[in-house]
Structure formats: structure tokens, C-alpha cells
Image (cartoon, rainbow, N blue to C red; front, side, top):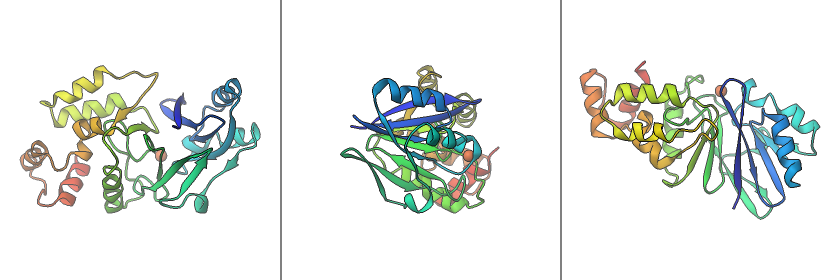
Length: 233
Ligand SMILES: [Fe+2]
């Protein structure tokens, strides 16, 4: 099975190394020194460098990683929707998830999802692309993954996202349970937890429908409910 190591850098950025017995792939590898020494300590080869989207706080480590290894940078056509990247005998699946940006994508190892700024622990990214409908379909796509999928996000926004989720659903006890398990040294959630706490995945929950009714926001269809949730500040 492929493993995932999380590396914190910058104010709240989270980057990753996905690795097998011999080689690895850096995703949003801004913590370049830490990644290179982790690889060296374990005798692992860095095979690929890739990003969840082309924002500088995610791509800033690419150059140093490529200089410090023989890795290849994967971009654009190297990362087709539904495509796979091989690491040893294992594969990482590419899932295009436009919304935060048009080029946003996620990497799925079969057990973990490197979600960039598409899906955070407890919230989702800003829709900088302006394509709300695309974003909705992207989130829907991620929701098809199994409950036990570990969600590794591009930033640690846990405290802010939990505060917002609580404001929307003060009676949701799963939110407090999740927050108690929060550890800034290893930030993650499972998709099962996201379904319980993340308002943007909860558009079909009666409690959310009630909230939208109270706020007099459109709530007929799933798409309307999702849009309404996105409009709440
Ligand atoms: Fe971003």
C-alpha cells in the first residue's frame, strides 16, 4: 500500500509525499528540505513532483525538489482526468476537480485523497474559478469515494472551518468530536467525518434544509441547496 507523509510549511500549507517501498511523488512539496531528508533517510527515490493546482503557495517547492533529485515534474497533459501514475506496482489516480481553480485536481491512492484546495477538513475551497456548477460536480465526484478515505487537504483551516460549521449547525455533536481529535502535527479527516461535519457535503441533510428555510434561501434541488450554502458568509 502507498503511504502518505504530511509536511507543514508556510503559515498553514500542507504538502505531501506519497511513497512506496522504493520511490515517491511529492505533491505541493513546499517543505523541500524536510521532504528531501525524509527521502534520503529512507533511501527512497523521488520519482515525480506534481501539484494540486497552479497557485504559488503550492508550487513554490517544485524547483528545489527537481534540483535536489532526478524527479520529473508532472503537469497538464501528464495528469489527465481518470489517469494513473505508477509508483512501483501501485497506482495513484488523478481526479479532475475544477472549482477552486479551473486546473484543480486531486490524487487518490486507493486509501487517501490529496485534495489540495478543493476539499478541506471541515470546509471546501473558495471558488476562484467562478465556475460554481463545476465545483459542485467536483465535490459530488469526491463524495463517491469510500467512507474510510483519508482526506489530506492543502491547508490547515480546521479551526476556522469548524467555527463556521458550528455556527451553521450548533446542535451537531460530530463537530465537537472531530475538533477534539484535531492534531496540528497530523491534520486529516475521513470522508465519513466530512459527511458528518462539512456543511458543503451536507446539502441533503434535513437539518441543512431547515437552516436554508430559516434563511429564506433556495432549497428545492440539491444544486440549489449547494449554491445556497455557498452563498452563506
Ligand atoms: Fe489555492
